[in-house]
Length: 254
Ligand code: URA
Image (cartoon, rainbow, N blue to C red; front, side, top):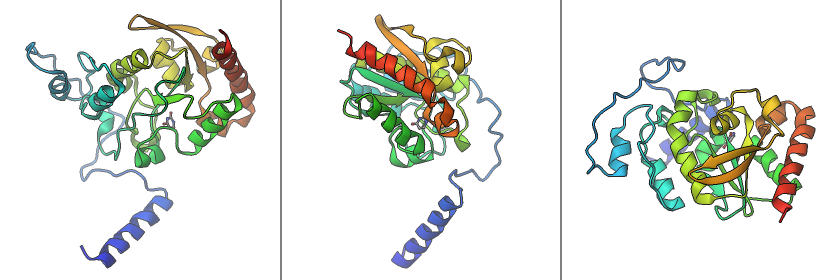
């Protein structure tokens, strides 16, 4: 392709992005509200390795096991995982950012458009607010670890369905077991529900410590309001602030 053609294409794409077009669609129409088909249950021979196993798993099925023993192995297992329908049409697998050695782990919902473009969680407007929230308790991305319950951007930034989240939760649980943080913050209703199994509204869930047992590791979890919600409802920031102070107090204790 000629340089001038490439510049013209890039300018057109830039214009579309500014006009709000940020989702690539397929040639054939698809009803995004229809839940993805469940993969048929199959007999899997014991000789099949984990990467092969997750590749064979098909649409909307969690991996049978996640045996990664390091963060790098886990990232790789997520990157080659084909069982979550959200992968389709995205640029990036958004795995995590920050320090996996940190004692504070934050878990959000799903990447948005900017996260998909950059391959990092919480880098858009909600992420900028999250950085300010962390700074308010003396933390940043070198003293906290940030991920989501799903690793691919849902079409149009919709909330991931429970079935979609179910496919990625084995990775999230392994992620927690590998990081072994002192405290987890669940950001928003989707993450709080996925992690606690409690479908109570986030306004009731937030601010209450929940014991989380993951693969033999106990870790207190604080559900709080999602920064994207706080951007829309700035009055609720005082609630999130109270939750952050409780987190800081627990991190500072002993
Ligand atoms: N919202 C989320 O829940 N996660 C991100 O990574 C970005 C926005």
